[in-house]
Image (tube, rainbow, N blue to C red; front, side, top):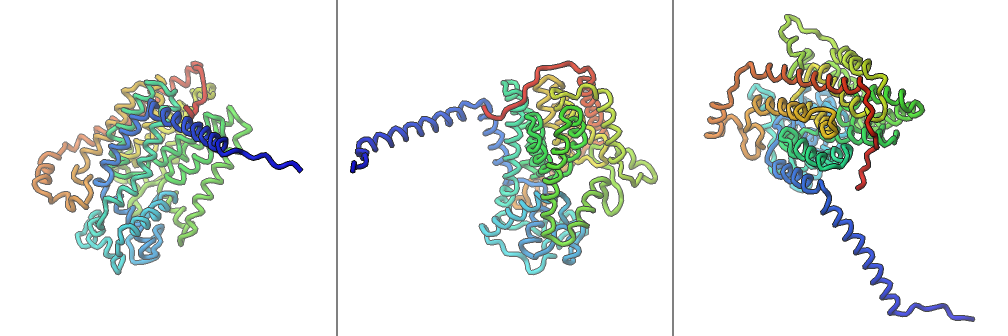
Length: 483
């Protein structure tokens, strides 16, 4: 019998040396590609700015509601959906969005509690007592300012900041990966003061839904129907607004990819149903979903429809009896029709982003309550179109500047600072005294900002509709994320 071949020690050593060298060269090449990436500096700068601000700032009411939801579930076993049915809780202190953000809040709060050893008060009512004793429910947050609050705020904001960075990358990737794309991504999004304030200062989670919406559009451009439907479903399961693009996407598919329409609808429905089914973990999920959808169709406070913020419908507040009807269900189809009719013959691949951007802008002319953070939804898409020369950069700049101006004039700037640092924003001399003297703006400013926002929306939609109506063919190439 012949003996098996044996590998000599020196050959084995040489093999592993060659293998290690190959791995090292591969890693070095990848690191070099990252270091040389044209967007690396922008992404790092935008992320560092956000991380530096995140722990020390918050939107006092919304951030309070976020941590209260964690306390409900972890500390007291209270349902965050309809808390007044679980305890002597106030109906206003409830969760009012689709489920994905809720589950992240509960998980992050639990991790924070384990890290800090936070002890809950014996009764949940202690967490909003000051709102009752002061007669101003919006001061309830002062009853729940735990130690290590900056750490909790940072944990809540981390996925939002990551989403901001990912959006900055997608703007650059979808728009063509050019130097112009990198520059607009930096100044139009990553260092945009408005975007930084909404996500890193206030901690609003709109950026997560925006990221999912952009991913859906990216995969639609890639002709990956199921992935696109999945990410649109994820966006809708985070905040409702990405789902409002579904009719426009289906119309585009019917015209261009009829055979994929059913797959898209199935993928979207499967994702959203699966996500919303997670609400079955709490009591009264069906009633909650019903309240959520009705409430979003007709925003109201204590049963009264409200017209507020940057929505042109604020003029209806002047009526003796403002209409108590779901205006968005009437106005959105009308405004979409204005976009669709002149462009219906030119809804090919190369016009998809223009068509979806115009469709998204229609929401701002249809919804009766446009909070200052809602304008953020369209900024990434407008940034991409500005890079591609389909709208003027001035439209993007004004579109961001108006809500930012309203945000910084409507709120006491000390309000943005964490209550862990400044407990009472109205009683922190001398800063509060200075603010009270300087932060007084004419009441005419806010209707003027609302009117200006409506005008810039109309200009943007008109610009995009004219582009669609002309049907000027442009070279089309689906974007690729890999460099």
